[in-house]
Amino acid sequence: PSGGVVSDLAKIDLDRLIELAGAGAAQAAEAFSQLVGETVSAGEPVLLEGHPAGGLAPSLDPSATGVFFAFEGCLEALVGILFPGAASESLVRRVVGIETGALEDPIIESALMEVGNILASHVASAIADRLTSRLLPSIPSLAMADAEAEFESFVARAVGREALRIESPLVDAAGGVVGRLVMIPSD
Image: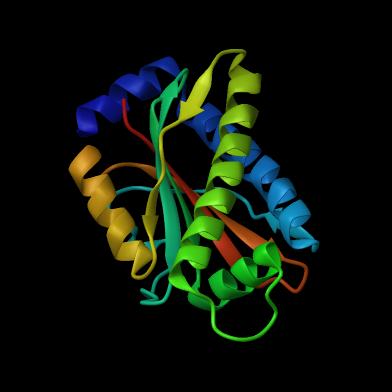
């Protein structure tokens, strides 16, 4: 698994990978802003090696949700879009227009999958445009709880736990993290 990362880095250097992840996060943040009607921006991408314990989300949030993709085309990568629990509920409520009351699981699932698809498509488009090639996200995988742990299992199965990762926080106007975009080169 780690040999695959080295071969990918032979094609696209590490600085370029960080730049591409940042561009994808910026475009996803712009789309996120449009979905929720508030300013959302992408923080600086951070390169992490190995297990994400030192990453942007040092504590696991059992109510966190996430949508995961494999990107295929000009850059083989795994992409996770992770939402802290409180931000996830707020996001779903804004997208579906239900401000109060209980949210049914099918509504939550549908909204998160749709938001994940939109954001992943924007990430893929930003990267593909910069590489003047094609990049497509796979059918998404959804985690309705324990998204950090679910994403780590997804990564471990595909490329191993010690894979390089580039993380970008998605922050609201007040500086609160409303999501994280994680890109892991896989080829």
